[in-house]
Amino acid sequence: MEEIKTIMIGATLKELRKELNISQEEISGRTGLDRTFISMLERDIRQPTITTIFLLAEALKLKPFELVKKVEEKYKGYEIKRDTY
Image (cartoon, rainbow, N blue to C red; front, side, top):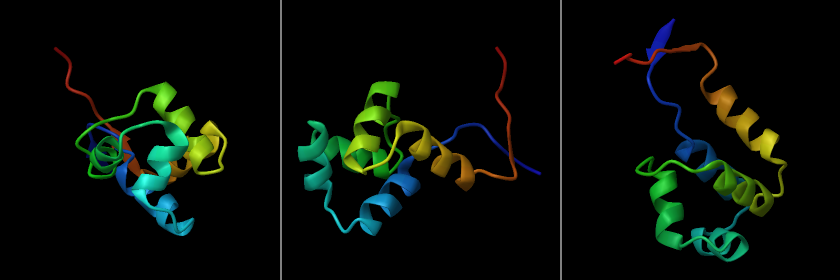
């Protein structure tokens, strides 16, 4: 089983947005989040807060748990391994 240290939302967010055929600007308008922030999320430069996940889910016409479930499916078969300090 492959190990990962961080679960990222970017690829899932981008795929869902493209499935709906909407732009980053459209997501921005639906959420009130800046378009550049949406871009940074999609490129895994930034990570969303739980509030942002709720906003994104609504903009994507999903329930928050459905968005998280889709991210979870991307990481099926990976073991989350964090370094301890």
